[in-house]
Amino acid sequence: MTIRVVLLLSDALFCLGVYGMLTRRNAIGLLLSIELILNAAALNFVLFGRLFGQVQAQAFALFVIALAACEAVVGLAIILSLSRHAKTIFADDVNLLKG
Amino acid sequence: MHLIVTAGLSVLVLVSALWVVTLRNLFRAALSLGVVLVGIAGLFIGLEAEFLAFVQILVYVGAILTLVIFAIMLTARLQGSPNAPASRQPLLAGLASLGLFVVLASTTLSLNWPTAPLEDAIPLATLGQQLVTTLVLPFEVVSLVFVAAVVGAIALASAKSSPSGSQQ
Image (tube, rainbow over all chains, first blue to last red):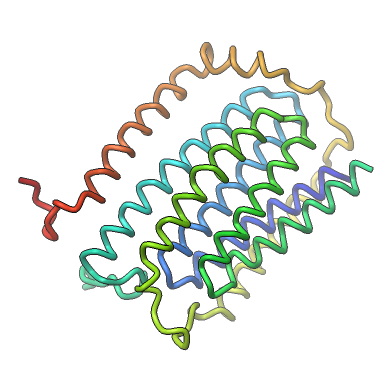
């Protein structure tokens, strides 16, 4: 029963992250939604690792957290550079390369 | 008892995650992301992954959230007027993600899951040994990615870089 609760939670977290990715206009809001999606994946890794006794699942959850840190660092650097050069942080307004 | 704790943490995480994607004030959204991360760390403890719970709090709440709040405060004057729409096409996106949730939930819940864990909890020493034996290649690749990310972030955010991207 507990397993299904956690499974449903990670499904819902993933879908909320997708909703945020689709609706947010602010680039930092997009980053927050990506963090939600990555957390849902890490939660699934840990749950299945506990369920089936796989140690590598925890290791990969660790890698997910580490890569999320890298992604946040690079994403925020891009957003800061964007706010400096383009004077905007709205993803809609960054359309210089639009065909 | 365990089910009650898990369900309570799940409700906390879900409500805060809803705030993360819907609140128009980004600072409050980032703070509710902190609640989500702490709640997931609690779930990790419930799944007997204590080390991951501490890593989650240390890396996510300690480092990433601080960075995000820092960036939000730096770009506060570019947030736009309070009357501008904070989101676009919320109805369509809500329908799409609700459909995705229905598909995911019906798929995962219809499977036959064991009611209790099949094995004992994994000790931390085993995880550490795995990281330096079987998983040593991904471990080192993550280190390389870290270095690349830090160097790239400094190059991107340094004030001297010109708009055209050419470095002198």
